[in-house]
Image (cartoon, rainbow, N blue to C red; front, side, top):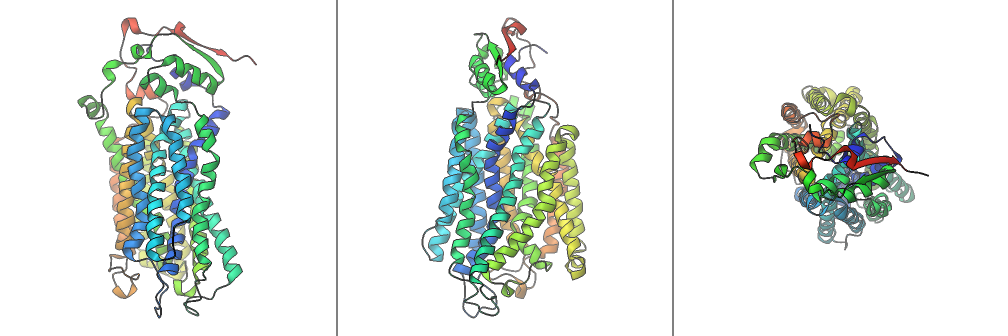
Length: 538
């Protein structure tokens, strides 16, 4: 292999882990904190919205969001995320990662606050403005997927790159816990302050007027951690790989990374355009890309699509599953605020037992076991546990076995996160060329969100009971929880086989993986003396 790699990129590949890497994880991960915070707070919020704005006198059950409204509230943020992933993924390759990085965070902060300030007191006014701001919240979150993954990938060394990218994604774990803790604190405080009776005892009085503040406070608090990191995002330099390989300015790349790595990197005036392999500058829709990376893109998009159908349907509708197995009391036996408290308590326990540990197991083992093995293992065990829940489903609904159901359900999410939920995020940030890396990650992530939309809308209807008398208000009969879980098990099994299209990227430099340094250049070859590293003198 020719020594045609820029020395600054070699320096990044062999750099020791430094404090800067950890600050970059926190700065880059705040978008994922907000993403998970929103995802895990919305089940309790939708229950409150149904009780507050869709109460019907003399109804045996508390008010709930009509099917189309529930689908809109749950799905509009996912639609915004999909659009943001495609748009900011493309923009990150065109303008640079840094130039658009602050925009996505500011969109998240403003939209989170605005979601809690949704206008009016009529159902139509509140839901319409809430959906509007949740779309833009999703749009900002979507932009963070390709940009954060690409930035962390291009900053990291090749030995621990997988762990660093996975750690950014694992910030979702703190978002999950943050959503649960904030919901528990806020709902507990209001529940104790107003002490409303259950719906069965006092239908109108079970939802106190102050419940309208609860969901607004919960949604707005998600903006706080993201806002605290805005300044630091603006201070991050452009990644050396973008500056050198896309902007073709080796000298600027060396200057930027000198500050980051705490070493002096001196580059010749040789333009990077002569160092970079011009014959490799093919576009996304070219035959060369299809030949080199076409199957890789199919692998990353399809596996993420299938994973998110199962992952998001399970997360968004945990409350329905918990009620079905009797882990949550019937809604009419609780007041509105206490119901939000119980939902948050259940989802937080699942997160602590299965979801959050799974993220950090991936961080710990991804550079030892490899991306391919972890993804294959994750899909395999998700399939096993889904079928183990679904086939003897009636066994799990018996009171004596409910704890077993929760344990199995937790293990499903453990292997989602110690598996494809993390690896589908990591791999697209590594295996595509620098000039297309953000775009291809955005396409892969958008495919995932398309799966999330299918899961969110499809499971909402599919999980309804076959018995019309047992369906939620306004919903037609579905196929039931049991058959829905079987469907999710089949989807996970298909994801297992599509994983074989995704290459292993463990321990390789990004340029090795993408083929950006694989040809000889003769006279344009960079000599080892053209750049050197010198320790900074204190």
